[in-house]
Image (cartoon, rainbow, N blue to C red; front, side):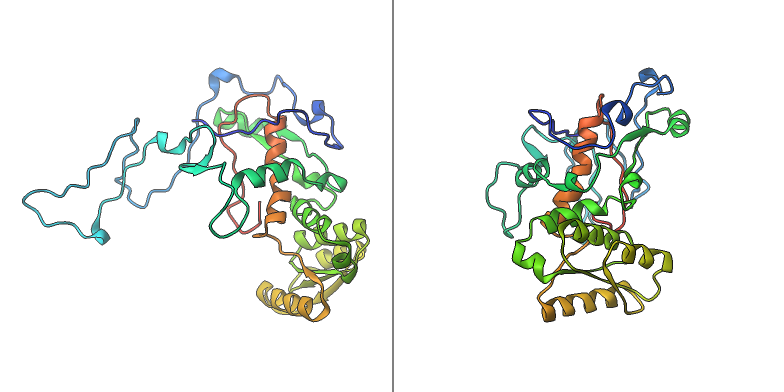
Length: 289
């Protein structure tokens, strides 16, 4: 199994709290290469579907004596491992990195990459270490490394995206202040970023937010407003107040500058890993990573 990796042309001037030795080291506890086996989890909507060892074309020609199948009853395509691989210069199959214009006007893949390399997140965040999970590695027969984002100042990667977006705001916008809606980690990321950048921050949090979380946000100097029974209600309040007061709304995800900030996690993994990367697993919930 192969994955795409980007290697910087030169070492990046990252201000890390951890040394390279601390981040990744060759350990006697690491699982030997001879034991490493690919580990793939997949969920098939059709239990009878087959994964072929080589790329094969799937015939869609209907039987001569049978009716033409409708699109609704068409059989599922069989998937081959080669479909997971991309040619050089592509991030996704048939997705050319060199395109200068994207249909919806957003950044293309290469622009995301270059902006990640130039991100300012290290003004406030650390280059977190990769730590070998010895027990998991022994259990599964592979080297499992954990990216220790829990060692960040606010115990989460959310600081990266929040700071990267806020650091790019013009001085006039920062002076008007920022606002966000969150139930915890993003709130602390925005609060600490505002403290470092010297701007006012308002954080809208649902009334169900545990006291330990909103107290942590207040300690970072932000103004906490407990509003609404859900995140959606808190978000609606934050967006409305942003319009009324001229504040900048800082979303937890789905914004290019936030994505770029979070993307520095991947850049660090590539930099810190000394061997080939078989796979990277991240949370499958709306957290913006």
